[in-house]
Length: 63
Image (cartoon, rainbow, N blue to C red):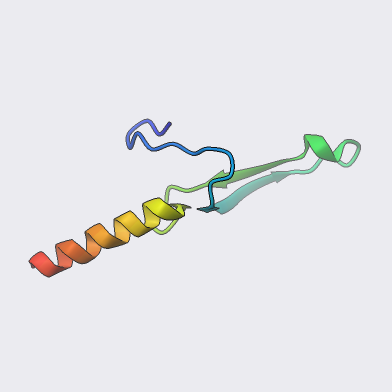
């Protein structure tokens, strides 16, 4: 659960993320790790991106 947003991810959710770190374990590949971030605009769960785009479009219409 996000600290500020209250949004959450579940197994199987489709997301758009940026890779920030890779930790490869050659002896045991199952212990390898990939660090991701989704803080920038346009990143996150696809549903969130669509909601943000809709809000942005509505706010442009108000101006």
